[in-house]
Length: 221
Length: 221
Image 1 (tube, each protein chain N blue to C red):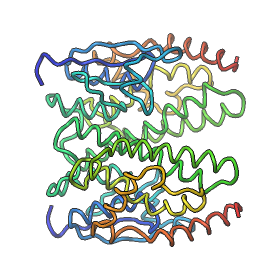
Image 2 (cartoon, each protein chain N blue to C red):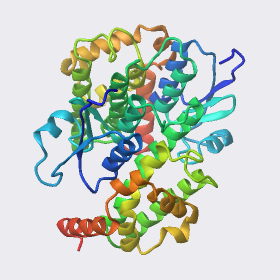
Image 3 (cartoon, helix red, strand yellow):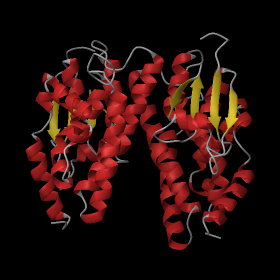
């Protein structure tokens, strides 16, 4: 792809799904413009036109053509800017990475939500479910530095932006991830040292305040 | 891959997700063994060992190594047996195909279930939601013969096995898909003429009887 590529992310600062796209772009050294969306208020015409079915961020606009769904966008970025590959070279390893990404997609944000968007018993169940999901991820990580082995790659990019929300889950759920899954916790710290991640991820304290604000809107506080 | 490959599908005859894997294998001319699972009764040790997280079919065993999640399995099959490619060659078209496959994954079976696993008003809502999903698919199809253009490919393989359940949805929901989405309906007929699909898909009447049996188990009849 030429340097003249026009790359725009329809973005929301706290979204872990947007965080994936921006981390992938940073890893690839691709310049991009972030267009912040008012996802709680009025969504932009460009967002509604680009993603008429789901009307969600992130939307990735590559020379004005939309690509949707964060894990698909990260795959697309990896295919279009092939240097510093994110997905493994081997078909079997690639399928394993996609499986783990799909598991993270289906479970991490959803079980996290059942902690912060609830109270009482529902929150206890949410906490148990979330810690179970993290336990599975800790097992998948095993003794490796990153999910794919020695190098930060596809699954790490899918997973790490969620960590900006973990302080909120921990404070509201009354637990510490490192007490339950120390290797996963060490993986978070290791990943947060990368420039691509540091540059993109929001401050967990700011996310926590946002979550508290949202809880008030939902009349949970 | 050599002819000596050992290819096994942990299977369930009525599952549209298993249907995808078998249709892809038929399209590629790969010999395989189907191991029928008792998904309502006792799941096999091999299933529980191969898919400990979700404990679901299909499991694709390639020389005893498991690959999970039907859309990921179809991608894997396409990569390992590259002749007669299923996914488009171009990265942008590939991202569009993956988006549509993801939409089908999230919406078709779920909205279908809200027709057959309910009664009364809930079923009416389910019927409206299902027809809305099919309308989106009809729009994505447009004037093309198949979702990817002239050739039967990835999205068609993801979508067509669901059609074996459509008779049940139509009978229980009191509608005909062809009255709402004639182009999508013509695409079903066109796809059902392919040998790979004919060989794999169950008789819709048999699926309907299975659904009625299931409804009795759920005390909905």
